Length: 113
Ligand code: AMP
Image (cartoon, rainbow, N blue to C red; front, top):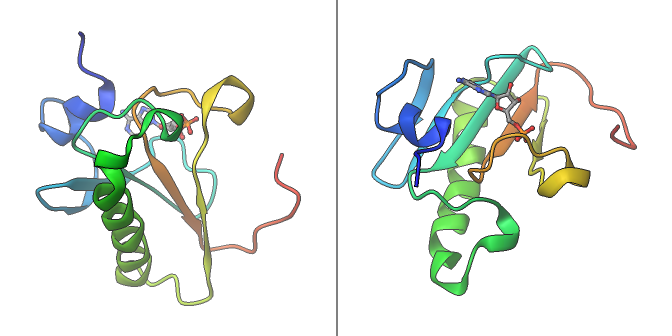
């Protein structure tokens, strides 16, 4: 299977503006930011989307969400932020490698588009 673009970023085969990494996850700035701060946090393991995560991924997904909160704090999103996980076509997913968006730096609206 071809590597996803996010696997290649995690492996440093293609450049990205990294803000955090550990043995399980990598966080980097989104190429097309939708808010003043827009960061993606992805597992190194190429899980295509949350619908395809398994019980074996339980700890990894928990770790990723806790690190998302740490990254948000690290980059100074003290007024709050939004975490977004797009799943499948109707969810607006465009990269088939599980990722959580961290969006902040402006008030978010509801309902989302
Ligand atoms: P989604 O629509 O939820 O699948 O989100 C994919 C996100 O990946 C979009 O916000 C894109 O702007 C972002 N993206 C795609 N390629 C790159 C890249 N090479 N570096 C950083 N962000 C990217």
